[in-house]
Image 1 (cartoon, one colour):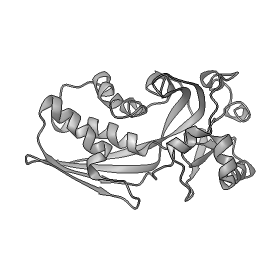
Image 2 (tube, helix red, strand yellow):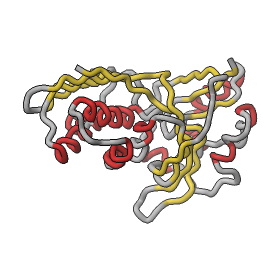
Image 3 (cartoon, helix red, strand yellow):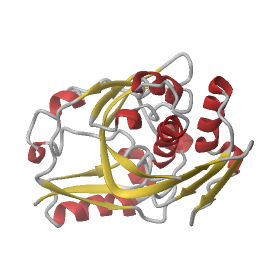
Image 4 (cartoon, helix red, strand yellow):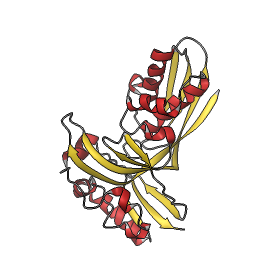
Amino acid sequence: MITTPVNCKINLGLNIIRKRQDGYHDLETVFFPTDFYTDRLIFEPGGEELVFECRSPWDTGADCDNLCVRAFRLLQRDYGIRGGQLVLEKGIPIGAGLGGGSADAAFTLKMLTEAFSLPLDNARLKQYAAQLGSDVPFFIDNVPMYATGRGEILTPIALDLSGYRLEIVKPDISVSTKEAYAGITPRVPELNVRDIMRLPVEEWDGKLRNDFEESIFQRHPELAELKAGMYRKGAAYAAMSGSGTAVFGLFPK
């Protein structure tokens, strides 16, 4: 039996730069891994079929559509891996912009590689991860990354936030990805995210933007109040993470 903790991420800045001909958007952001929320994967090899169970307080949809199952099927197709019992215990809120589903998929790929001794290094795993979602490859290396393209073009970035305490609030508000993008007007930022990361955290406010905030905060002013509350409590920087509704603050320790 293999048990694997699964961490989430926050987005530091998120600029939607342009809409592409394939219907996706070019963006730039920094993915930063955090263990503030965690899921857990448990796998017991054995048998001919995959038995999947998701233990979650939220509705995660049909099991056959789960990214963990889809990750298993990719490796089964190419390497003929056999069955087993795969359990996903959800702790990362869904629809939060914290990448929980993407993390589950990436860690499933890594866990199955270990369980079946597959000849897959991280570069090859990222190729599989990209077939499951734009930000799934990030969780393969699971270190701070500057992301461009659809979020799948990753460049490691030196970023030490050990001097800050992270606080995340996920209210009972949901915003679909389609709804989030409907309020976006793509633009090229004056400062790119990677340049802003070179500044002290205390200088990020007013420079480091999440382009989803403007329209989502108009429809859900309580999210704007959550962000303002972080600053009133002494946050050096606060923002919404990704296109979800989790709001985080970085507080000096």
